[in-house]
View (cartoon, rainbow, N blue to C red):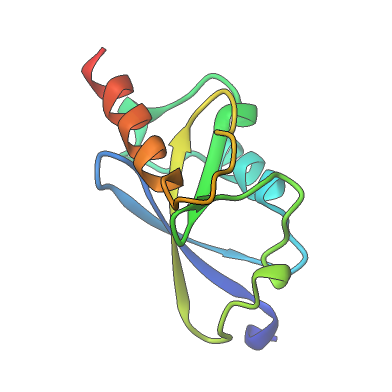
Length: 113
């Protein structure tokens, strides 16, 4: 049963982390909704108003809401780390690998304002 579960460690821009367990069938949208509905203690300052603006970043790329954990072919039995950010829209994909830079600059702007 544990081989069919995915241990996900989510990191906020503030550096706070929390581990969650999901199914390989869970999508990025399912994860965002679960985290929003079960917002961890200690993350109060980062609370958002809607699950729809929570985005996952994995290996420097934003995950679209329909992408499942199983589609990412994550190694079984290991903890996978992803960033969780609040962002209204996904950036346009580009071929220069600047997705994470855009994400982090957007997050830093959010922290400064």
